Image 1 (cartoon, one colour):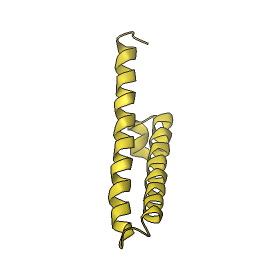
Image 2 (tube, helix red, strand yellow):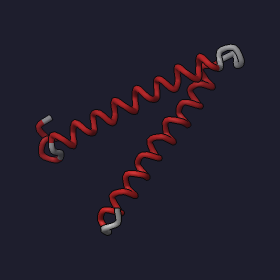
Image 3 (cartoon, helix red, strand yellow):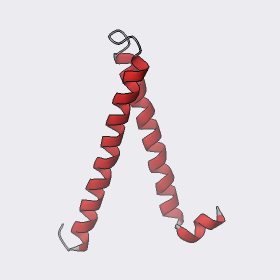
Image 4 (spheres, rainbow, N blue to C red):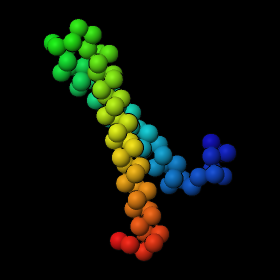
Length: 80
């Protein structure tokens, strides 16, 4: 924890933890939802649920990163 203090501010570290928590909860919720929805249709619904939830979770994370980087570039160039 002391080494992290030199590289990150407290706010950055807390933001990092909150984003990690959000990604974990969102991923597990997607997995549970897809597994439950596919239970009657697919014999091994947990496999299909895992694939679908990973696809959705990765898309959401990458979408947020792309939107955040676009906003940062816009602020850097004075565009609102």
